[in-house]
Length: 103
Image (cartoon, rainbow, N blue to C red; front, side, top):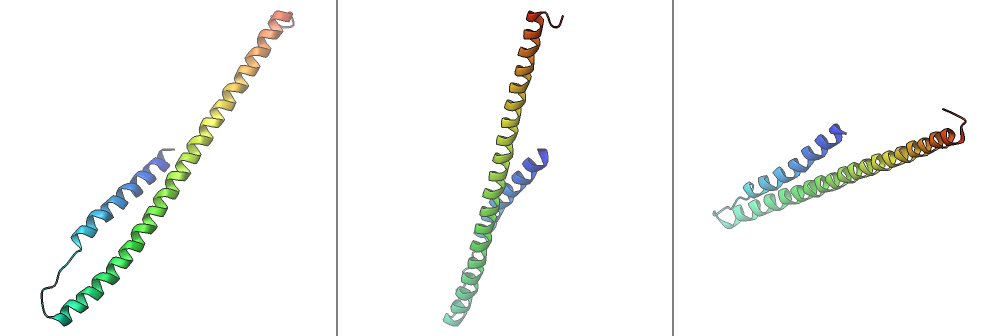
């Protein structure tokens, strides 16, 4: 259980760190028009890859969070079933004592 929490928190924090890095990557060129065209091509290509990376990281984070919630739900259901089973056997023991079958 701890491994899942550590992985999801690491993934969650890494997705936020990528958002902060994108703000630092913005460059503005103030030279002639050909340099501006080259820089706009480079930044648009870089921002496209960055957007794809962010989307992939977001999807992975959502998937990991979904797996975490599913495992948590499974464990809760298992504990409820176990408690129900214990109650069932406790009732049977009381019944046997009442009927005099078992002391």
